[in-house]
Amino acid sequence: MQDERIRELEREARSGDPTARILLARELARAGRREDARVALSSLLRSDPTSAEGVRALDDLGFGPLAADAPWPTTDGGNDRARRSAHPGPRKGELVKRIRIGREGETALSLTVGPKTAYLATRFDRLVALDLENGSPRWIKELDFHFDAPAIGEGERLLLGEGGKIQLLEPERGDVVWSVRPPGRVETRDVPVAFAPRGLVVAAWEESLHAFEVWSGKLVWSFKANGELHTRPTVTPEAIFVSTSRGYVHAVHFDGKLASEGRTPRTKNGRRVRIVGRELYLEDIWLSGDRVVKPLHVMGRDGAKLDATSRVAPVQGGGFACALDDERALLYEDPARIVTCGADTALTRERLRGGCADSTGCVYGYDPNRGFLWLDPTVTLVKKLLDNPSGPREGPWDHHVIGPDSTLLVPTEQGILLVIS
Image (cartoon, rainbow, N blue to C red; front, side):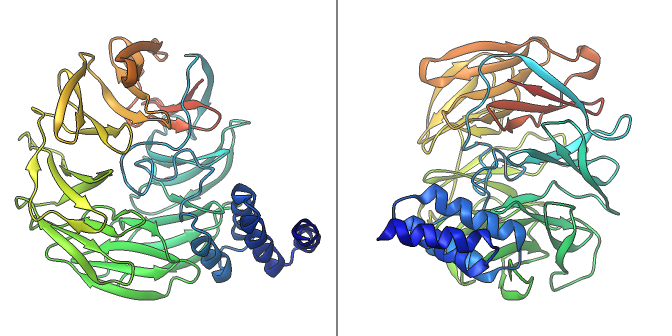
């Protein structure tokens, strides 16, 4: 009987009926076909980014707000900002493509990656949607101010914070679905934004965290923080986490109410919040001209309940590289180290730049002298994935990321995107 109902809804969904698509997704989930249910909702939201019922169905069925088929849906890998992908990385060590990003010398400052498209924020203030299969831009959006590459929501909806505005873009042509300014001063700087559960977009602006409806851009609530907010909100299924310039760390419920808060030493610009299981890694924002090495702070949590204070991570002159799993993080030091619940063990003496992890916990780093390295922490194994493919004068930048089909994407200083399998 259930199979007959699914076939009937599939016929109705093929005709473009949005209600049938949502009913089909719910029926597929009841039948245990969760991936098929997610695909049905993703298809609906791709064709209609303003579907409130489609977004609510995502929540009802327990799917996250980010695109599950995107190997790198935010500039830091995911809403936990831990530079870890839910997709596998490369193993062969072969350079399979060299793709020009845009104009001559147009370098990428940040990127996110969908199932077939890389979205690159370039030094010319352009957003380039690069088709990874044919190597050509699908579309290019000329913008006026600096911005980070957009977060990718389910249905490949693109969330952008640029020029003091928050925008939702559709993926086919990059058209604006809605655009709003957060309450407060009118400025032209970029807005730190993130997708969140319950159909929310959250944005940090001045001393407030604001939440908007993802389908309309309507303001839902505002939370007053204890200090200025300069970094992207970090989102888990339990809460939204932000760090302020006064050293406070707030955990905020999805209704805008404070869940808990902790304290770290005061810092002028705030800290990036990265979450690895039951711990927050708090890393100072480095600005041009900074000379002082600042410690990495670690704060425990139980869901949305934060420890009252933080401790200093056991690394000298280092910082956060990436999460290996839900308990361990790779931190920068010489040697690089794995930190497990506060106890650290040496991993490798390689000098790594960048760092990202795939779904198996393997790490990909770059050594300017040796090229790309593949680290398997389960067996303390270091393999050379690929020699420096660009030559010493155009060495890759530090923000290489996991791409589709078990690849590594590397934007270089010469405006080339390398694809490594």
